[in-house]
Length: 272
Length: 283
Image 1 (cartoon, chains in turn blue, red):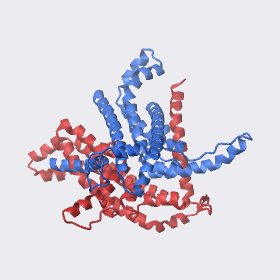
Image 2: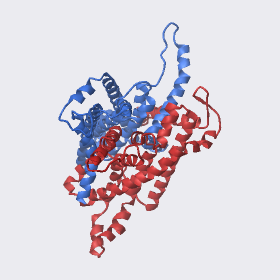
Image 3: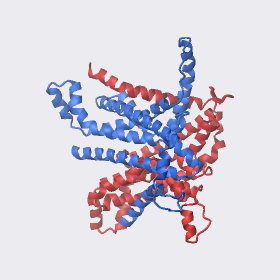
Image 4: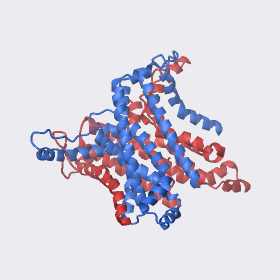
């Protein structure tokens, strides 16, 4: 039994390890280990296409995670005190947003936004003051952030609600009995307790957005995110440079994920 | 400000976002699926089921998905179950959490990089080159259904382990003792006590993996080399390459309907078992 478990762990981690190992390989291929070198990292980091894509990915991940954390938390706090059809509707939307496959979100966002933009663009041209260049709405970083925020917001709401449900409600009552305003109670009682959950939600959202390929593939327009860059270079052939990029991406994700896990685990233990 | 007004205000951003980015886009897809392709590449609104009648044109994609998704789900189940059992029942409680985290974490990292790892391993200069070294020659692994299956199992194993672990972990271990005290052999205890009680976890895991597989694009695109074609690949082709939005919308709607049917069957099954819905939050 233990042997079996070890085998499964090896299966899970060997491929990641091999990529990391060969990213330091001086040779070009898996079949030729030729000594330690960090040249592929240097090559990746001095490639302007990689750096551009990385910048786009970081901007998208940061903005999506920020919006998702704020809106998701707001919704979670409000849903705490609501019953009836509004709550049922939000429960369903949150569930659908998380369950629906990325490819469907990508398609729906693409044709939904393009249709809306096609209607709006002539209107903008018509009302724009003559002599100025009217802006043109199109797919890009903005639409990608909007799409990521939509489903990550649902994810944050789920995490924060789980934390709120585990909270001792008498604390809030005590706070208002002691004449704290609702805002004061929120700032001094609720927020400190749910903050680790919000932070964990932010980190998870950041990782998810940073790693997402399929939604970006549909909605990012002419821009390139890091996963899209990696995807198109893989199609041209396997290069050691991709090993280096992959190792860095994996490293950053693992770091963020483990932090998120620790935050959530510690809170769970505290609430027992 | 009343409590009510405050709650509405707090819900406003999330509500607006859901409306603009989820409800309206999904409605547009639904409406377009009854439309016709415009000569310019857009969609002419109509009320025709022509696109749906034309679905068999992409029969190969549906067939591939409907064969490899169940095979992949079942393979993942058979590999995941013993591991979940080990983690929930046999593992040292001190190490349980960290071992579980080690299973879950890969699921949240880039599926692109993890699939790429298998291109690297299965490609001509990876495992086949090693096998040649020991005398097995001419073995082609990459761009085969087998490679896609390996990628599927690798990608979705964590998602299968987690719900099964949750259901086995909740199981009262005294039941197992009672069973063996009453003279049941270990395998009989497993078949008559452990397995039936873990069915909700198995159902949750299978449903999650199956649903995600139906919309999968990356794994077949990278490891199938264009020969193993899923519905997801057909959708990318229809929306980004051949730009047939009306037909693509019909394929997407069909995909969502099949998923809804599976979720409904799952809910019924769970309801009939009288079990509570398993915790599907994988974090």
